[in-house]
Amino acid sequence: MGEGDGYGCKIYFLISLEGILFLLQLVLGVIAFALVLSHEDSSLFSHYGFFIVVSALCWIGALLIIFFHVIGCCKVKILGIWQREYSLWIFLLSYSLSYFFFFLFSSALLSQWTQGSAQFIIAAICGFILAIVFFILCFIYYRRVRKIRLTEVAWEGDKTRT
Image (cartoon, rainbow, N blue to C red; front, side, top):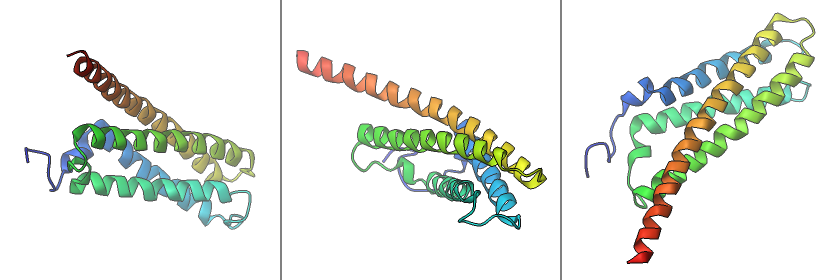
């Protein structure tokens, strides 16, 4: 295996743009989750339940993705380099796109039901910032998927002509 292809600690992920965005997801997700959950009117089955679930899944997902990147699981060649990269980026693109819409709508709903509470207002602002972060990640992953797909189509075309 070449350098960067095996298991091992990959701390340099945390200082990349993608790593910084995932750390921001983790921090803002925990803050938004804690702010909404600590209010006395909020529970899982109240108006705020959707935001609680979305923010909890956000920081748990960010923590898992950071963990898998840091221990090097995202760099292991299992099914070949093309299949591994394409599958990973498609998954992360769908993950980011889903959470972009989840946070956009849940933050809009939360801002409707703030009741003048500073906790809800700050949590809604964190949710809107997270929607922007997920939109940036959608753009990054779309460009990667598109590049891999164009490279694969060009390679398949060259292979069939000979």
